[in-house]
Amino acid sequence: MIDNVTKNVDMRPDFEKNREIYRKLIRENANKTVIAGRYESDAGKEQFIVEDIIRKLDVKSGLTIFDIGCGAGLVAELLIKNFSGLNAQVSVMDTPELIDVLYSGFIKKDKYLNVETYKGYFPLDFDFNGQKFDRILMYAMLFDIDDPFEMIEAATKLLTPNGKLLLGDLPNISQKGRFLSSVQGRIFDASYKNTIADDLPLYEDHHDFVCKMNEDPGYYSLIDDAFIEKVYRTYTKRGFDVFILPQPGTLPFNKSRHDVLICSYD
Amino acid sequence: MKSNAEKNKDLYISMAAGNANKTVIAGRYAFDEGKEQFIVDDIIAKLDFKQGSSFFDIGCGAGFVAESLIKTLYNLDIAITAMDVAEIIDVLNKGFITKASFPGLKMELLKGYYPGDYTSQEKFDRILLYSVLHSTDNPFEIIEEAVRLLKPYGKILLGDLPNINRKGRFLASGEGRMFEANYRNTTVDKIPFYSDHHDFVQKMKDDQDYYSMIDDEFIDRIHKQYTNSGFDVFILPQPESLPFSKTRHDVLICKYD
Image 1 (cartoon, chains in turn orange, green):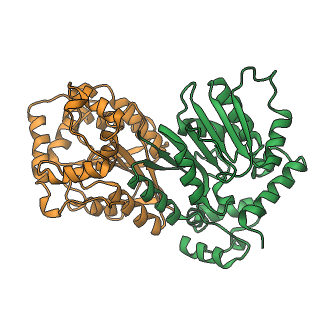
Image 2 (image 1 turned 45 degrees about the horizontal axis):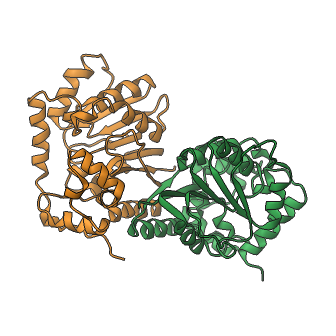
């Protein structure tokens, strides 16, 4: 068996460029599905995402919730709406530009004024002074940063006893490779690219896909099976429960993404 | 000296032969009676059954879960194959499954041990090993052989795995100690103290009466082995309505083509 090939860290892209893409989308007033990094054709699926998050995080009345990298799209708005409806105390964090859009376009406008907002980069820009949260969410964001492990580590330190941290919507390159090297995946990809399966690149298996992607300078992914196993081993050893969860078929990227749930004890 | 599998087999056969209650003969406590439907609902959700597909229940047992699962899958027009030792299959066959109750039921009952006594080449869309692997001497061989029986896009659920590390994490926690004291009808200070799950596991390993092959390392090994071989592998919690949700979890292995 071949172990997954991890790309050399020197090949990491400039993540600031990714952030600039999101800023540009905001300046151009792109629609609220697109500014969150999803396709326009996925509009309307945000409610499924939110229902899945609430179920996986087991959100209950009176809990404190911290959404790290909340974005300014519909998922952020629906989460605030649903969490607040469950009488949870919500805190959200993202870069100043995104928080400004979320605040003026939704929080202030729709009067969710008890939502706490943090502007900046997690964890560097913040000192929480011992503040902890019952539920923490990092959704569709760990692949857009330089050091996901540092971020997960910092987030687990903010969990209350019996707290839960959801690392959501992880684009696992190995899972994507398994899907795209399957017949079902090739049919899906051909339909999505509006072509025929014969015109798609052929991958022998997911190892082949990962190797080819790692050779492509335009593609970068830190998240693969080895990453997930490292998270599992690190946190179970330290006394957390760790679960690796599929996404329901209604979610936009369910064939190539999954979630990880980390649960603390007291 | 009897192996783990032999000791467990004797226990389950004697309970089945002695007409123990149908919750107890499946290895659960009498006070868990009524929770079987939650177990079945959870299995159905996790295995995502499709109407008209095929299903193999390895180590099906003869309790309420087996009965309720058959009933539910019958309504979905699933072709069922169920296997367990002869004594258990005889009990299952004795009263519950009648042609009058289930007209047109597509079901084959197999007697014996898996994989040794399984001779068919038939493949299945869904396979279940529920509350079984910890009662065997060779869980990896059983998983390996069961995975071979999956059809393309098939799924196998390794259900109700008593992960000793997870049990340790729970019993070393404040919540776990209170739960345990309540369960044993005593006070928390009378409950053995574990500094963490490593401490629990070590103490359990020192105890000759305790035996568990299933721990975090076992789960990690399954994940690594099957993802490397091209399967998706998920590690799933159990809903709190299930009898052993605090100390057990499930693993779902999904095949591509």
